[in-house]
Image (cartoon, rainbow, N blue to C red; front, side):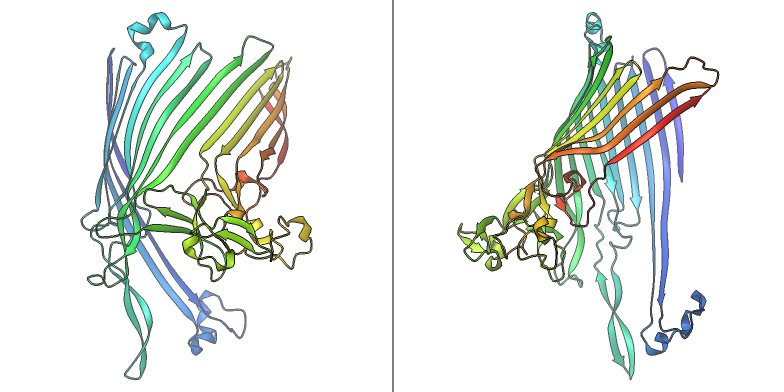
Length: 506
């Protein structure tokens, strides 16, 4: 539910608009699960679940759950423009949620922005043929995040074993969560400084620097016992920082010629770091992320340390093979040891799974009644962990596969492939043709029935330029906190070709 109130004022020089409001949101869910087996016949529905024989044997199962939370918000915003040249905005939002601790239920989230269209200033009047727009801008904003279970700030209990009391087995209860009255909002702030421009009525774009920070991030830390009764507690401690630049250029390359050509380029560069992980009370030296698949494994693909980059692979540095075809890795002292005898202390940061550079390039050409559009995209400066190579790339793996020659990469390595090492890391850089469309517009002489008729052929994922030996580097997750793992279950991007007709009737 949301209520809004608006007010605006405008004259020749000033344009002011106010918005105020109130929002209310309640979320709740309930569930019940019942399981019984060994029915004497297959006719019972849900209301006959009790006739299964497991109930009498004590093997039937059931559980139920319920969760409820409320979010309330008050907000206000003012937009101001002076002669269409100076544009400013300011807002504040105050939100409260029942999910948080008693001391931190409410959060304040401000935002402000300002922009100056310089070409509307008097000193730009004689430059209108060269510069049509030049607008420096600045913005700052903060939002709150509360995407976790409803009762994490409270002390909760769950069932924990059976106990014999007076000859009867009784279900016991034990603590399952520590109360935290200071559990609060995760706060996401962003600063953007940029400039928008247009020159010669043919070239426009923008360049922007961004600084995005996540403060008071939640994490389960080891809880001191006493005073706490449960071994971990969810608290706000962590901070991350994402900085970079974005560049957008759009241009009319060919105009007033038989062939017209419009082109657009978008480029971005950025890095993300974990700037804070501990405080005086709750400490953690690192975070291990994304556990390697497989029963009994204790390895993780990524490690994040305070002050370090997010998305870095953590494992052993490949050092070749020995005379017995065993994989070698570098130990902490620089010597070479077999992968099977290496210690966790020998691990190091071996590559970055997050691309440093993203690029997209669009083109649109027209000649007479023909039109052609193309979209290219690429990512550069990152590594991919090839899980297919990990599972089937060595002589000692995949012994039940028939076409062994189809996937073996290193016939001299027989063992040692069961650890996370740089041997399975490859450069993930790629540049691909994402979309291409060729169309033809038929000239319509009699428009009493048809307004236009166009036929086209469109193709997607026609080719990818890459040195990666896996299936498709563009299909590998490249964002988030665990990027760059090419899981063996992932499907490559399919090539699609479409033929179509667009008809518009009068």
